[in-house]
Image 1: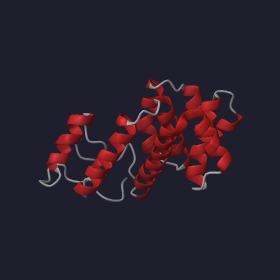
Image 2: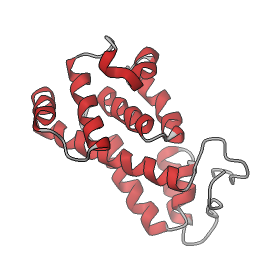
Image 3: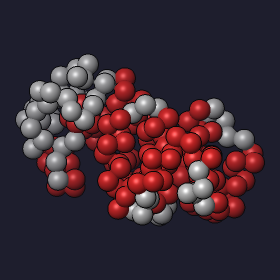
Length: 179
């Protein structure tokens, strides 16, 4: 159960943002139901994460692979629950998702995937990325995608930390309706 009750989606300050979220995403996920305690924060979050997920040119398989890796490393099951179906649609296999905890030893990942997973691991665990890890990602992705990858890993570390600090989980009881 979440540490705070979910926000009132009918609150006048939140209403315009709730309408935007429903228009863009179909429903108001529990993450946004929690964020809507502060509509300005929720608005900025929505804009940033929309840029990461929908406006970035980073290939979808790479984006979802690192999101799933970050969720796993940070023990953020809600994040993983939300992104596993997206990862599968983007071409990541169930076997690859199952092997993420031990990707270094799994033959399921090509050189590009190994480079981005090592990068996600370094950013998440150490913060500072070793030069060799950075060089491998840059060689595989180029400058723009390296920047977009970095922003994606950073963003989803933020997401998992928010979710886990407030204990937002998929099967929360008493969550309000999503519309």
